Image (cartoon, rainbow, N blue to C red):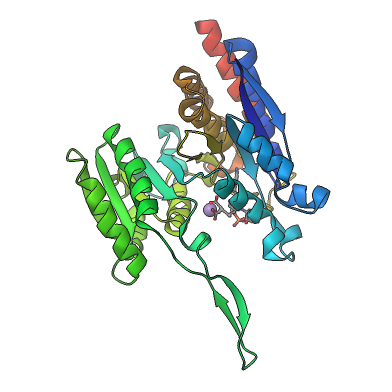
Amino acid sequence: MSKKILILPGDGIGPEIVAEAVKVLACLRDDFGLAVETEEALVGGAAYDAEGHPLPEATLAAAQAADAVLLGAVGGPKWEPLDISVRPEKGLLGLRSGLGLFANLRPAILYPQLAAASALKPEVVAGLDILIVRELTGGIYFGRPRGVETLDSGERKGINTLVYTESEIERICRVAFDLAMKRGKRVCSVDKANVLECTELWREVATRVGADYPDVELSHMYVDNAAMQLVRAPKQFDVMVTTNMFGDILSDCAAMLTGSIGMLPSASLNADGQGMYEPIHGSAPDIAGKGLANPLATILSVAMMLRYSLNEPAQAERIEQAVAAVLDQGLRTADIAGEGMETVGTAQMGDAVVAALRLLRAEG
Ligand code: NAD
Ligand code: IPM
Ligand code: MN
């Protein structure tokens, strides 16, 4: 039976990069026998414009019914004046909470071909392979109370609350330890336990979970130091596990180690293995509509989808091989091009990945 994939292009560069990922999916379906059906729906600003809400009920229902969701990006200056409750970003957060996608995997891998595109010296990043495991449905993003209140004095007070229950911490730590068992067997739990009670609890629970994984070496680090260490000596890390907000920030930082945020895919998983897949970057309003965006993070997100939700690891590897092949050929979008290198646009990059896939088939 074919697997159902819901496609949510979203806003800004979202539709441009998703179109390239859809080409890749179509190639796997037509040339490599992948049994998938796709359906498209609205989310974010596009959904607000059409239906007055960033996450229409029909979109959430279609996401719940799908085997996996592929999302481009949401948001942009056009919708910034809206009330926060209907801003595009709420559509994304509603999908994450509505589907229970508590585990966000954000791998940061340096393709050797891109060593020169990294903001760091080649020797600092060569061979980099980090996995950030970000808690995605809790923490300060969802904690209550929240909002803006007006005090008796007339002054306003803004409130957000960092909240984690032990079970929320435990389940995300288990995901991190289970994944670490399949790779470098090291977990660094990142917190601010010197200041925030909530993350003092985080550290305690991480330590307790770690006792069930005697083969995995657990370390703890304060988030400020972790940000510094990521830039100083990133290869010390294998798996990092952290809260929703710290993971958001650290993953953008890790992205730059790999050359560009346009290279980083992600998987957001629930307890049933259902997942949403999206690049970690946003809608890039500064380059939207120009055909300049790097589609590789989105294409690599399809590879993660094949691996984590569709149980098609061989198809996932094909995509990763095809991406490596186009980088070998010297194809670069502007964000990953070194000085003086020629660049290609979004569609040319997508087409090149499809051509590389076809070549893999021809080579058998
Ligand atoms: P951004 O990630 O959209 O852009 C940051 C910088 O990276 C920009 O200079 C942009 O051009 C560049 N960039 C991002 N993706 C790229 C790609 N694929 N190829 C080449 N360059 C790329 O972050 P921002 O500017 O802070 O946010 C813009 C909007 O996107 C905001 O509305 C924000 O809320 C939203 N956002 C959405 C998501 C998401 O949908 N998952 C993630 C982050 C930000
Ligand atoms: C991300 C984004 C989102 C987040 C925003 C757009 C809600 O920055 O996916 O990294 O903060 O989680
Ligand atoms: Mn982010």
